[in-house]
Image (tube, rainbow, N blue to C red; front, side, top):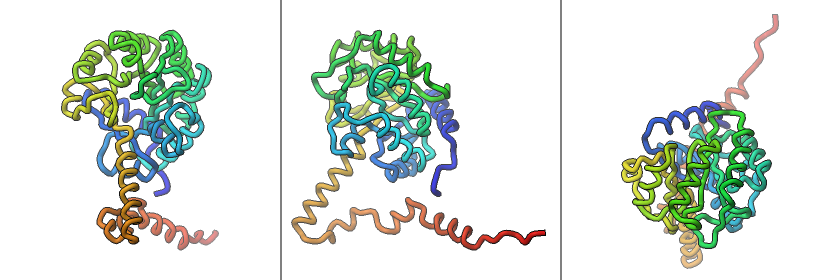
Length: 301
């Protein structure tokens, strides 16, 4: 009730231990704190805050318009309500290496378990759009070095994302990933790989935890969890799935309401009032309130 019962440090350790286990972690992107609670209830391993989802939620395209403080504020709302480790999309670090350093500490303070920084030029764009650009690998190395030096908790995961596959080809993306590990990255997120063969080639070449981005309608083939685990991947990320599902339901509901003049036919598809109260823990709040209301100080000596 009101907050999680775990600490950021314990959640970071948990994520490190899970990554070291060798099994595949399944991580959906939540839309808001309420959906983060549902992600935990459904038994997933961690929760993710997508920069694309936050931008869309603010009515903005994913082209680097959001700020580090906006991301950190939303992230803190997530970490207040879930005991799952939470990962965040930190774009390019929101500026120069010094900005990347500040971003790391903002995200640590928000209670997150880790973040990923990408090698796109700033301002960035969605990783599955054409026309991306990447910075020289030396510049990305400085970005990562600043992040590593700024990190205060060694269990805070620093992941490097490379968008070079679509710009320079697979071999160059692999070479960049190796350089980023040398610069201090704990894990690598190869963006927009095309197919199973490319995922396999990346795994054979890079010896740190790897993330597979299973976003819909993008450049990567959607691989199931068993396939990704057999390929040796450590994280299967579903960054925008819940947002797309929810917005599809909203549009459908609006069309139905406009056409029928009532929401009656939509009721079976809704969270009921009792389910809403269950997720939010109304009974726990009521019990806490009663305890406080009935509390009296013991008589003095």
